[in-house]
Image (cartoon, rainbow, N blue to C red; front, top):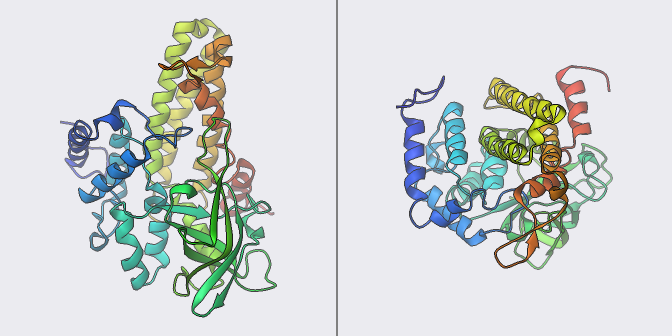
Length: 391
């Protein structure tokens, strides 16, 4: 029997491990055979299978573990949530299609939503029946989120939304989008913003995919041209969107990041294995980089555990800055250990030349230090809001 880590409910980790083992050996075995199915750079893979898996998780009580029981959760401790995310990654389970709903908008609705909003939106997220995307970045408001220009006004009991969002992950499969927009004419910067919940499947919404270096299209442009949502679908008070949106960004750095690190360990192991096979491990400089990567990954876990709490503050930017820079360096190391072979695609079973796992790691990890808040912005947050330094 595994000895539970500090704070874990005795037997919880074993329960999660056993359930995952059984569930991924039956009708969802195909999702496990392709370890990492739907992961970074592979978001197009097996969507229908992963959607069915999401609903299977929800039906059996393995989504939204920290939520109150009345909304389908287990009111699980942070330690138990970490245990599940780690076991989920170790089991080789597929990438979640509902993670934006569960990890970002769900906790935000729990904190700021009315009873009616909680009853309407939380159960479908828990059951895997409605998928969400995040409407933050714009062509002129990426890392500078306070420069949002998408506008909305009230008309006949509805908010009417007009503007453009960009780099919107999974918008092409989402049912709803939480949209930060300007609802007070003439307002600037942090003032006059509202946080609206907008249905995606309506005539006023157009989604255009953005082709990435990996050849796939997780990210999208989203155009709102008079899209409508009910007047009640504002989270928090109108004009309070900045405060609500900052809370969402805090939840983005939650317990699931510990599971993410299991995936990092798997990637590092493959890099080390490749280095041994190609002889790159005999190079003292590359060997030093491999050792350094392993040490930094251990530090990453300890730092994430140190900062884990129900109400994350600005210090979580330290974790985002750390893992994204580390992962980008790992991608560069993945290319280095392959040597010249890393510059050439590999044919699949049908003879089509494509990317191997390490090449995909290198290409996709270039985005890590930009999405979810660029490294430059994270450093500013750490300096000003955590260390108290002047602007």
